[in-house]
Length: 122
Image (tube, rainbow, N blue to C red):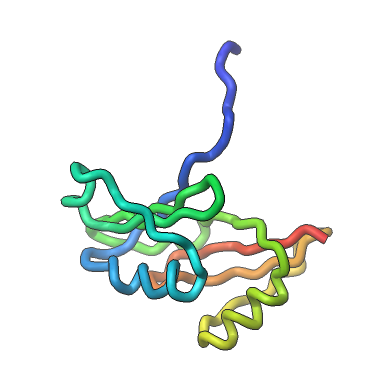
């Protein structure tokens, strides 16, 4: 093969119409991701983009909307115990999962019901 995968540029989660403010409160307000300006041509589709490090998380409008219950992005976290305490403080429920050897991980649902995984390798 002459092509090479280099990195993931972004992950997209789906959300219903008019999701932007709720997404902003959760992804920026609680999780601390930085909002990124969408290109002008894409703004009319709705949704909102966020950034962390060199990666982006896009929240895109999908109609009809059905949350992803099994498919999910997994984020590597430094100091996951602090994240757990922060989520509890903000009344964001999570489920601990010890089924992956060597990983401390939790599952969280965003405000739209999409599953997300947060993990720290031990």
